Length: 354
Image 1 (cartoon, rainbow, N blue to C red):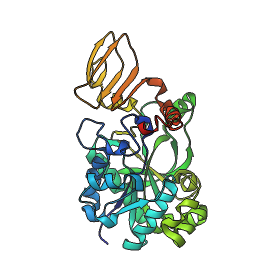
Image 2: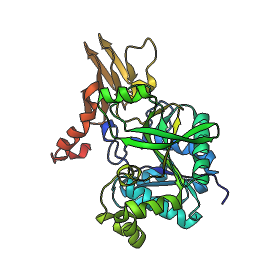
Image 3: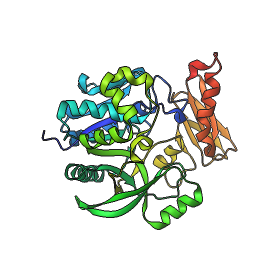
Image 4: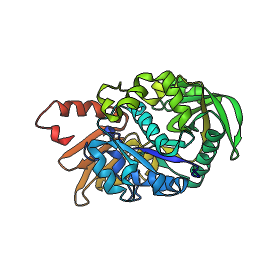
């Protein structure tokens, strides 16, 4: 086994806060949102392929609902490298099952990395150098390495990681013990975190040797790993819905953080387009044919180039046209899109819009 890293792409998310463009049958990770023409999933695969030495060692885990879309967008992915969950149970079961399957093929010493399919990365070279450093830590230590993103504003939408004592440098990058994980803080707390210089955003990317995490899961999440060992995917219906952060990372003593600075965004909602695409001097971010009068600070998107969005006297709004659905929301309320989707789900006449 000469590969440095076995990357596993987590591609089962719903992407609800990008509705109405993101739908059940084709959620966010299968869309092109950054202007490149490639979907987020395709971009994620492309930047991981050099580390996996090609398609044979790249894996994807996704839900049964969208497995065909994965096959369509990644036609070179080997059939046996696509793991299909019968239902979504959050990231702890996904990481556990995928790690078990990777260990079966490559052995317990395989270095595995987990990467969400819906992230944007700016500096590809810095990204790969960071992953090489993380892989080196995982190979030489009993370590679960998480990539911490250098925060550039006091975000209340991300989890934070506090770094403890320094454990050396790998590929010229410092690595620290994790002191603690903190869920999404309020504004004042986030500002305090940044001012200390000891905190980074939790990226949701993890690198480790398979054996290390499987042993830790036996200790901290036996109700997840044991049914999967015994029953495989047949156990999914009985598994607790839990993230890998809660199930393992916040409990293990083997967590390390590698603070990274390669340009990153988790593309959590429509406001991400402004962070990525806004240019100096532009009044709005326009991915649509837009005719506006006294409209500024807004994000406008239309899936059909023949459609026109006309606005008058608007400020700081998001307007999205897609099929039979139109979204109009203030930029500071995009987190509430998920609540609206529950209302659509409860209405039989509108459920087809999900």
